[in-house]
Length: 83
Image 1 (cartoon, helix red, strand yellow):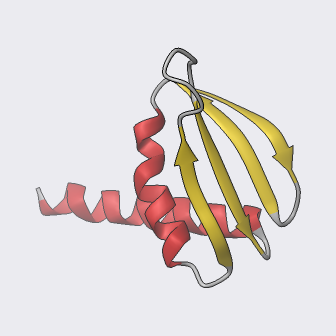
Image 2: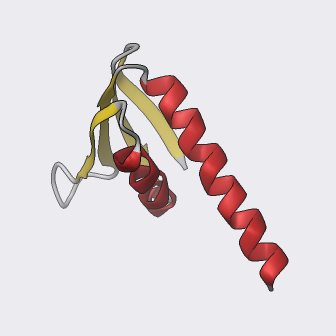
Image 3: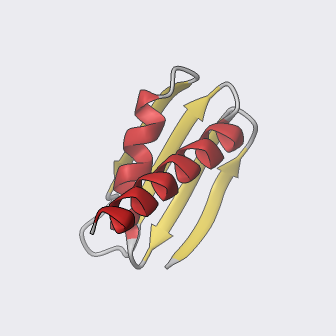
């Protein structure tokens, strides 16, 4: 997986994900549920282009993204213990 930023500020991230982008689906869900996030979404710019564009907007995108990743990690650990 490769991640490259087109824009990275406190309030907005615009990045391109190539490779295994499906891992970002649950992270997007956590972001959408976060009240500080105003927008989180994916877009495939063109079928022949590699990568997916992921845009996140909010009051502090980096903090919200880290929180979403930790929540996802916690859910994965709970799932692993349940098996």
